[in-house]
Length: 297
Image 1 (cartoon, rainbow, N blue to C red):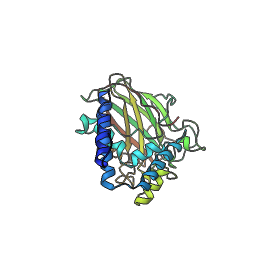
Image 2: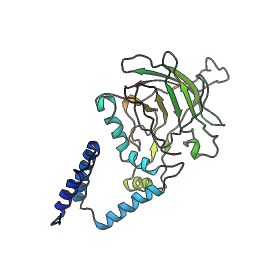
Image 3: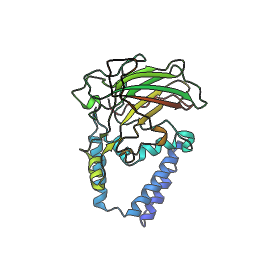
Image 4: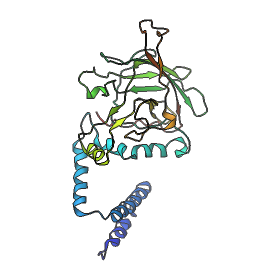
């Protein structure tokens, strides 16, 4: 088409997108062009702003490394990750769900740990935390034989691949649920932490006057054939940033009860207190069992 005005650009692009043979890709591309062009027209994007936006996209790609994923951070900081998660779970967003964000720090091949074992592999400060997890299906029946991948940040706010002071795979472990759908382990109580702010996301937060903190949380990735892979984060409701998560990830269903105990631990008298316990129930939904790709190596 020989263009007469800016409306012709959108019309011509939509006509091209409509020729996409794959039905789902055609739907996505038609909507993308429609809304992207409308956005550009709405804000009257300038040529300078366009060049700056292209440079930002390039910079986010260049910031990717074995320990960092700027694109995932940006998606979370815009609320996109949480929106996609909630639209695709809990009866298409109509009910509560144990699903949450994958985040940028999941790794493959966490070491296997027997139930009751610990995932602390190096000297890690923090109060002892004893976790009891329960896995059920939507009918309330226990899910036995599920594989549960657990990971979390240390009490100094760093994941092990960010921190040379931590041992390889510290605060990571893979468990198997028993006949009653249970798994349990020992770790240390995590704290909230700031996301990296030395890149594009950091500049965005500064421009908006936003803090970079995520509230304290425990990650889990649960796999069982016949179920959709459950990716979850359980949050501490007493964290000071529980209502202002920079990644928009906290939902009511993901609030855990991190109980403080000041008396000696009943089965380990060497722990005089304080220590903490968490008892949380994960609900798996039926679906195709497909592992995500790790956001970092």
